[in-house]
Image (cartoon, rainbow, N blue to C red):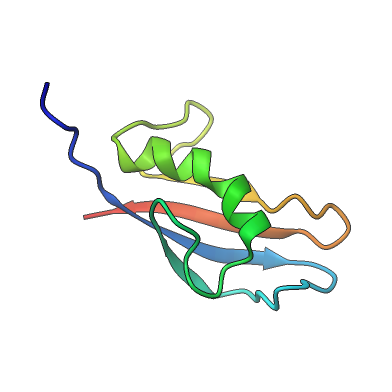
Length: 89
């Protein structure tokens, strides 16, 4: 069986409220793969990883207008950091 070709996925902070313990701020970008990117909060990575995996292997989400992106947040409800994940060539 042939291995599926994976695409690159960039996670960009699009919103941050309160005080992020990891210091993330709007505009921060990370290349998401199978390991936590340098400088990214591990909790945020664990929350984003399922979404990134879908995008990496060609999937999309029915609630998103753009099939090459998704939006997800870290699990800190008191200080949420929201990321846009985008599949790039």
